[in-house]
Image (cartoon, rainbow, N blue to C red; front, side, top):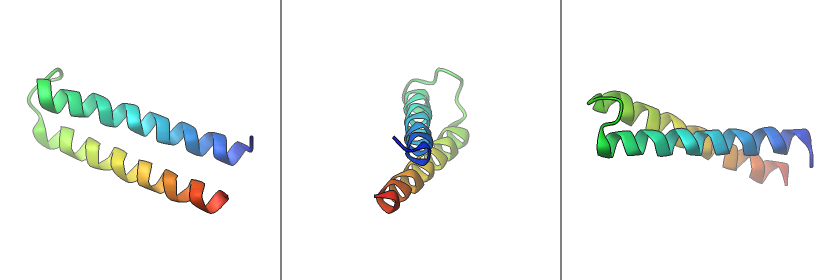
Length: 60
């Protein structure tokens, strides 16, 4: 597999983990009640996942 694809898939995976952690935090409140921080991290991870998917589509 090409290095670009490995890096992109890794970035998508890490963004997915970050999104999952902060979605759980938003629902349960593990790290405290910082709703704005949770929403911003979720949006940032979603943007990174979107960019990764677009990059994978261009590399095909």
